[in-house]
Length: 259
Image (cartoon, rainbow, N blue to C red; front, side, top):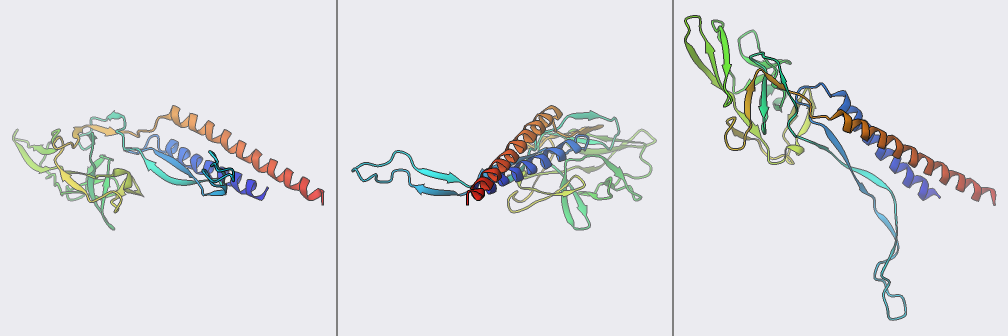
């Protein structure tokens, strides 16, 4: 009975993790560039009472074994880097990556990566995100600029009062062999890890990198209907495991009362 209690308890813990992931996805429904997460589980080790294929003593082997599982554990929480919905803002420094790639920004703790393209100008005209992290490589918009144009290849041009256009920089993107291996830092930022691989630089629209859409922001890729269904399934699974704990406890009490 103690094993049943512990096994059902692992099921409750797993469903609590699933509910935490679902709640986080729903909370970030309106977060620019947020990538939904999915909890993945694996079974724990087994108590083997009889090996499959063990000799039966009659010059034969048992076609089946007897193995009792000990529960479940969280194996990973995977990020889904599918592209989110396009939100039109018509703001010249709002940029969306239509496909693969990340923007690179400089933080106080080093280089970080983001899909959130809501950029602005700092006091020196340097493009930065809303937390002041400077876009890399740096692009400076001079004060005399009367307009900003950014092509789908990431070329940044400004308009001047005399009608001339001037190239002031090139937006570059990076990608990773395994984006799911990136570490989430909060503030819509990621850091590379040995699991993600080193960043690979490129130009928007070339070599499998996505193009830049000016005046657009990438929304979350969370599907609220899917998350609501997951929440209901998780709640039911939690309740079932809770009932298993109660049943095992009642059986244990019955055994104790027999003594």
